Image (cartoon, rainbow, N blue to C red; front, side):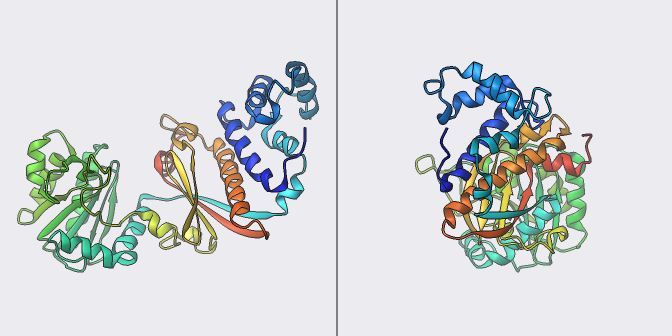
Length: 369
């Protein structure tokens, strides 16, 4: 077996990490003979056409790699064997990695920064186009109703986040939201619900639809739950939903959407939690439930599929032992991307992996592991 060119080593390692994680069904970081055969049979270098006695060779190969004789091979040892010369790879780029779970409060803070600071001018333009007041108007309350959480923002600095949304029904959380909103004792006259709840509207609906009307259309939906709670708390406020429907022809939003994605702040290092203040990352990985995005200097340099919900979560249990395996795969991807972006010079980069999704929820819940 010949050694791949130096510029391909990181790419090969990343690919093998992905394959190995899929076959390592119990996530323990080791592969047995059957799993090893599965891997070698699917990597181009090891096609059976080039290695006809693969079954016999596996016995000798496994014996050589199984240093402690337990019948298993450590994933990293196997990758070192495949790549043959690890020193050439490691001399190109080095990483210092920190992994954190972003709390719901972290997300809310970053979302507010994106909404009110980073994209303030454009967002005010979108609000004006819809006939709404600016973000600085104290009479405006914005509710970002996502699928599993809801955030509340106003001009006075309000930032509340609770675990309820269009798909997650949590009566206590909704009550907590109302309590948090009423604390400032402001006389809101305009309440606008944005984000996922807007998917309940249709492309032929106007940009703003009264929440009461939407609740009448969908009596069992989140619109009904939010209408009842908000009407009782703010009987004089005009409460409307911002249309998030997509045009069936173009597959794009029928109306321009407010820019409030927390990743806009995350990728610029704005609003990071205190545990990251001393780190100053060069590369930020935004890791959600099914994929992660890699950013360097605020620019996205890569996106990879990784189903953290399936790999790290078993029902209501967070499988923390699997987290280092997933982090190693992300590191391999980052190294490959660095080799592509900076092929002529080596670099030492600090990498912050910020994780949300179900794994975050289980981690914050202090679940059994």
